Structures are given as C-alpha cells and as structure tokens.
Amino acid sequence: MSNVIEVASVSKSFAMCNSPFDLLKKNLFKRGDFEYFHALKNVSFCAKQGETVGIVGHNGSGKSTLLQIIAGTMTPSSGHATVNGRVAALLELGSGFNPEFTGHENIFFNATLIGLSKKEIEQRYDDIVAFSGIEPFIHRPVKTYSSGMLLRLAFSVIINTEPDVLIVDEALAVGDDAFQRKCHARLMQLQARGATLLFVSHSAGQVIDLCDSAILLDRGEVLMQGTPKQVVHNYHKLLHMTDESDRDAFRQKILLGDFSSEYKKNETKVTPDKGQFDDSLQPVSTVWYQPNGAIISSPMILNEAENQVNLLESRGKYQYCFSVTFQEEAFEVGFGMLIKMVNGTEIAGATTIRNHEKRLSYVGKGQVVKVKFDFDCNLKNGTYFLNCGCSALKNGERVFLHRGVDAAMFTVIEDNPDATGVVDLDINLNTEVVA
Image 1 (cartoon, helix red, strand yellow):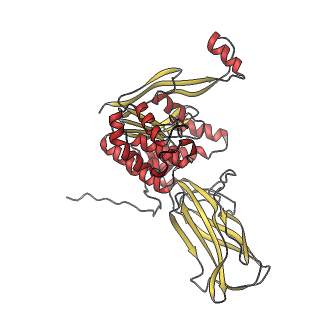
Image 2: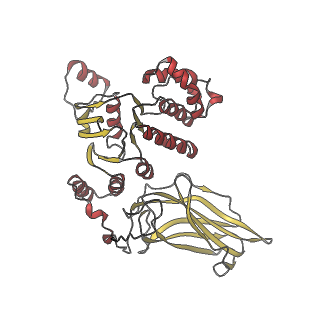
Image 3: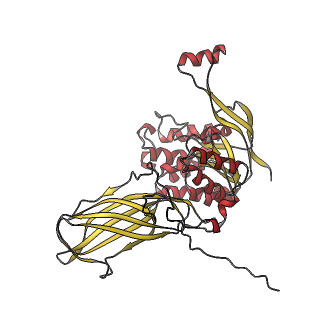
C-alpha cells in the first residue's frame, strides 16, 4: 500500500525577535543576530492510505507546527512533507471562516478553499447543515456563534467534503459529548472508506480507539512511533515526570527503543508510596451544592503511605478521604463516593446508606467525621473525577446534607498493557495447543 503522507527530515526554527523592526531587518535585509527556537528537529514518518495516525505530546512539543507543515499552511526550514490526494484540515477553531459572513456563506467559502466545486457544495449542503446541528442560526454571521457552534460548522464542512487526507488538531475537545460521539462515528466511516487520518489528541482513549499507530513528539523530536498503547503509555509517564534528570534519562530510553521493561507486569509491584502528586492537576468543573446541615471539606486521595496523590498507578491501593463538619445534629448518617470518566460515564462508586451497620446512628452538632473509602485502582490510563456526598434522615426522609460534584480528580499514569477497555480485571490468558 502506497504512502499518502511522507514527512522527510523536517525541521522548523523560529527567530526570537524582540521587536517588529528586528523581524523586518531579518526578512528584508537578512541582517541581525538572532536566537532561534527549534520547534521541530529532523522529523520523519509516513502514513499509508487508510491509516489513522495519532500524534501525542505535551504542550509546546511541536504537534501543531508539524500538522501545519503537512497541511501546507507553513513551510519547513529544512526537509519536506508531501501529501497525495485532497487534504482537509481543521487546525484552528474557525480558521478559514470570515466572521462577517453567515454560516451559509462560510460553507460555500470554506468548501471552495478545500477544492469543491459549487455544484459539489450544493449537493452536500443539506448534509453539512444537518450534521452541524445549527440550522436555526445558519443565516447569522459566524461572529455571533459560540465556540461550540463554530466547531460544529467547521468540522461539518470538512467531514462532508470526503477528503483523502483529514488533519485535525485537538479541535474535537471543544464539542459536547453528543457531538464528539457523532464525530467519532463519522471518523470511523472515513476510515472504512480508506481515508488517511492524522490528528492530535490529548485523549488516551481516543488515540487507542481510533488509531492504527501513534507518534510521541517531545521537544520537537519524534521519540517513538508504534502501537497506540505503547506510545500513550510512555507519553503519560513522560508527561508527569517533574525531575529533569529522570525525564532526560527516560527520553533516552525511548529514543533507544529500550522501553520493553515498562511493560513487564511482574515489575509493577504495589509499594506503600505508590503514586505522585501534581499541584496543577485540579478540577475546574467542581460544583458544591447548598449545605443542608453539614459541610464537606478537604476531598483528597491518599496512598498506603498516607501521602496525598493524584497521579495513580493501576492496581495500587488508595483511599478517597474527606471531612464532614456537622452544623446540626443528624440521624442515620450515610456517606457516598463516585468515580467518573471525563465524559461523565460513571465507572464505580460506593454508599453506606443501604447498610445500617456502616451508617452512623447519630452525629452531634459541631462534630467532625473523617470519611475514608478504600479502593483498588483497577483503571486504565486516563483522567477521572470524584464525587462525594453525605446524607441523613430528616422528618422520615433521606436527604443530602451536602454533596460535591467533581470535588477531586486523578490521572492513571501506569497501567497493565495487556488490559483493554476502562477497567482492568487482571484477566489472565492461558492457551493450549491441542491435536
């Protein structure tokens, strides 16, 4: 099968100009002594017809620069990138759209830029509008659209042009869950038709589900290209390494292809200090309900050494803890917790309200209860959110005294490479060849 995308020794450098005048001297007079930022360094890879390639890497690793060069909107400093066939790219939200034009006008404008004739656009117009789901607003200027509406329209135009090569740069993260599911289904249709897909995503599940292979970019270099599981596994470990010497050593291991030991299950022994803590990993979607006799505080995850962690390793043992301060006396008090995926899917939870032996028959006003839920983290790579709640009987009915949604979050950064799906059930495979 022939290569549809060929990237050969591509490098891209940007001059660090301090002023527009410095930039003018550089471009017009070829003068000036500038420091250069090397966004890409000798990047090479190929993608065959019908192949889906995911690109992962932390912010600033060169992902968007690479996609822009492949799409033809940026020229490399050295090397070359060739693409065979009609290319459609969604590199930046609303790129190619005129904010003064209506959605209707922008459909024709944008599809023409991609290479469709007026007749082809007219034939697909109804499908484009239907997929976007913004028909009531299609004759309004796009400058009045929300970011979600703009994404829907931009993606709908691109996906309905039936490109040979589709390039998407993390734009799907803007859409809601229902639209993301619709996009996912359409991407699979393109795959079945034989289109080549190249996209950047921070979603490990999306990369593993959609991609045939993946590329790990770091500091402008291709550290590895391999199966999505292998690449995502190393990406997550690299992402959360805070010590630079450890990070450099791990980068070198990946570059040399010496990462097989990371997949040996017998080397993932549970230790009391399993897990790490990242200050920047804090939920921004937290919702606390109005207190009704109690206040929950300090939700956190502790490892077996009782250290606070939010970067967890699969098969480790942890505690989800929070404190409840009672503003009034309460009877038959119960507590609950819930673990959810990023898209809101409920993974697992626990509650004490159904078990009278685990309920507290009475708690006095002013008392504080420390709540601890022990759990085994049998989850795959990804980010998860935690709810918490406290309830009691009031006038014969069970009511919430206080509860929080997305009160805490954690990321699983090391898992069992043999497991699939979301939950790792530690399934062992045994085979026997019989005559």
